[in-house]
Image 1 (cartoon, rainbow, N blue to C red):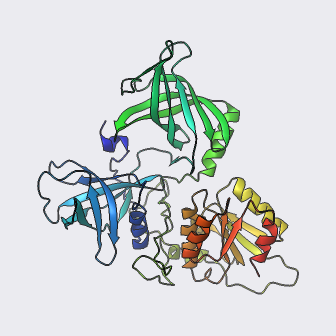
Image 2 (tube, one colour):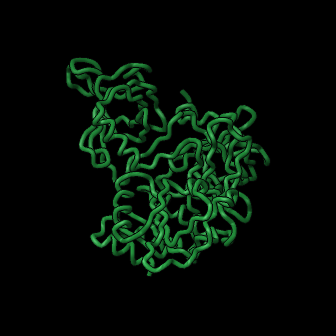
Image 3 (tube, helix red, strand yellow):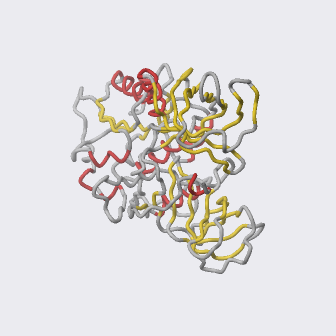
Length: 433
């Protein structure tokens, strides 16, 4: 199995795409920095091998990006040579349209043009999530209780139907002796009697059976893909609750990502336009799929809220809650009701277009899941909608620390709410002043 096949990076024929420039720049900027997985730069023509690359810079005004190749090209790359860049953003695999080589830079860095479109590059039918921050989860796998091979490792991604695992150790179950890890430990389609997940997002233990989908060696690591084949009902509930907390995105959507900010709080190079609304996410109907999707909040004017009207004496204030279902949303809703709000609730900003025309709100409370970057990106979109610019826009967190406060300030977010606070209801009411 090749690297692109393992990563699920085989191009599809689908036409729906993301063409919003701000979101494309945000996607590319999201790839910069330590800990970011390598991308794949695939030549469109000729016999050149793909490169593993890291994006080192995004130059908006020049319309270029700089990438660091994992090895030096065997021959000089001609100017204008076409490539397609594959990368992962918010656990979602995407590919660019053709981008073109410009010139070598320094230390095996090279300059290419910015893409104008982003396409889906997922082969899996279901979305996946990565482990939480500071994750301590582990996986123990037994082929059987008496014989065969057992594995110990760490989960690297989760989905409704399967789990991806990085293998750390292997042993013979009967002799209890460790053996070298290799691609021949299991065969594709082999059933594994026990897969035990420990310390998964606060869940002590989950057990299931699994079926091997692949066992591959990629970038110095042995990776095992499993399909979940059997799980007790009570453990299904716990596992689904964990997946819900990870805010898995549908493959029909393009993830929402915030731009990097300068010290003055503005976008990296392009000044913010008060009337420009970026594409929060392109929602693609399952059937029939449109040829091209231009996803902008401005594309649904009929869903725009009504102008605010003075509230009558004794009338409850109306708040919009944007948060995935789960424990955080449940606590937030309970506190807002206690604080005297009337609520309209949606799971994510894409559902804003589904609200009936004529609604009005006096505050917006946003929680994007455990990744506060999603929350900030959503708030960025609200800030660019004229109706919402003058409303209190509240960032809701399951824990509030200095890092989140600094990030919120850099995005111009004035209101923060910690659902773990004992004064949550009072703090929510204080948002209105």
